[in-house]
Image 1 (cartoon, rainbow, N blue to C red):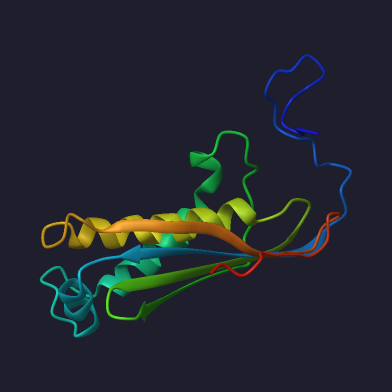
Image 2 (cartoon, rainbow, N blue to C red):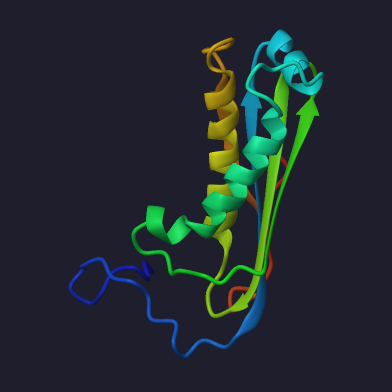
Length: 158
C-alpha cells in the first residue's frame, strides 16, 4: 500500500498524529569512486580546497536537517543525532555512512539517505576540477530501527 496517496490517488503527507513516539534510527551509505590520485590527495590533506572529508561531513549533517525541504512529502523532523562517517576504501573509493536518530512518530530513513547522498555530492563538487570521472554508487538504506514496521537490515552486497 502506498501511504502517500489518498483514497482518490492524490499525493498527500501521511498523518502521523496517532503514531506513538518511539526511538527511531536509520543508517544509509554511498560510495564515491575516483582515480587513485584523487583519493591520495584527499587522504594526504593536499586538496587545494581544504579538508574534503570535513566539508562533506558538514554537508551531510546539514542535508539531513533539511530533508523535508528537498523531498516533498517528508515530515520536518527534530533529529537528535546525525553522524556522517567517511572512510577511504581501497585505492579508489570513499565509503560514506550516515546515521540519523530521533524520538518521534515517523522514521528517519530519508534523512540518512539524504545525508549520505549530499556528502557524496559534496566530495564530487570539491574534487571535480581534478577528476570529473568520479561516480556515486550504491546509495542505499543499510538499517532501520524503531516504529511499527520494526527492524530492517539490508542484505550484504557482493
